[in-house]
Length: 93
Image (cartoon, helix red, strand yellow):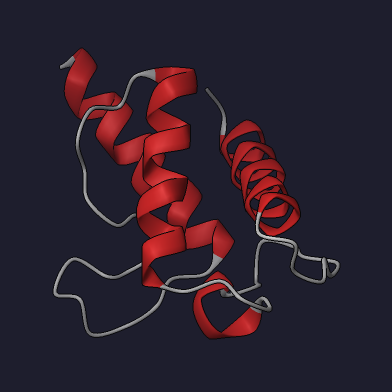
């Protein structure tokens, strides 16, 4: 999976979570920070995102992909894509 494909996957799932939750959908890009930057998207939505990513590409239990490893900062879509790529590369290695 490339970085662009990972970004596309995250954007699609963020928008799907928005639609399922009945929240307003907004235009997002790799700089968008879903937690706090997307209507109705909270830390539980981040856990949902991780589960939905896992269902598609089998990354395993990684917790909340939308938060930094120390849990102190919400990540942008681009940073989430990088985490996905890190996890998938660790699984291969």
